Length: 366
Image (tube, rainbow, N blue to C red):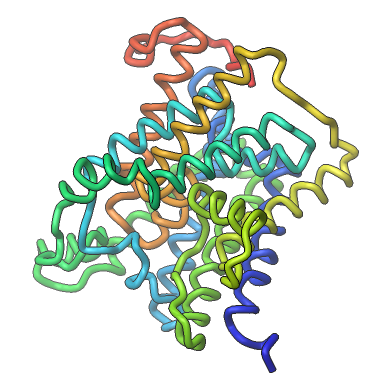
């Protein structure tokens, strides 16, 4: 039957996974920028530990799925032999700075839209259009020579997997040892906090979101093996899929929505459900033209930066990290640097304040 075709099943799989992620993120305040901001300015690492727990859960689960033959991360673009280092750094900084200007990332914007934020709708529209222009449009003219043409060829060392790189250096396959070492370090840092060990709601949120991201590898791997048409193997990102969702809404090409589009829709549905249950839906718009301009600029930086860096806080930070891609930690550090610079500019009036040991304790305005 046609409705059993993998290409029909795939967007619904994305909706299912997204609904879980969106509901939990809205219900329990899972937000990357908020986690970083509270860690830097309030000394509260609860949100950051939950975020790292999601990444570690996704990493461990994904590697088990790969070992069982249920996930084929090697065919994902994260593990391509071509590693655009300039894009990972520059794109990550751009994304982080834009995230600070907006007050959240693309994922967080979908969550906020579920609660009635029209500012988030503006941001998502800009992210989607900027991403499409950078990936497939006029901005690609700049991206290709500065990012693609300068990419490092890692085919001689087995690609850009941290496991492959380590295996090449020691002359034996130690991918599993690398994955276990990274997971062990992550879990030790997460649970060394006695306070966090009793935060069962946050722990459950981190684990569930990590598992939901890992599910994407299984769903898209199954579809790629079963469908007659090519299927992109992915787990979750909130940059290009936002643009693809916009195209699905405004055009008809006969091309079915993919897993990424389904994930965007599912996260929005889950966020709306959580907001309705908590009676937390309220319409919000920009206060003035200055705030609107800041959101448009931030969305543009995230759309361009997310494509150049091949992912966002979720795309590289959790999905890419789960594959052991070397790009993931580099992009994450770059995003963190960009976010710190953006917050310093907003709060202290100077980007240079980001490089000072002692910064202010004020929380950034949304």
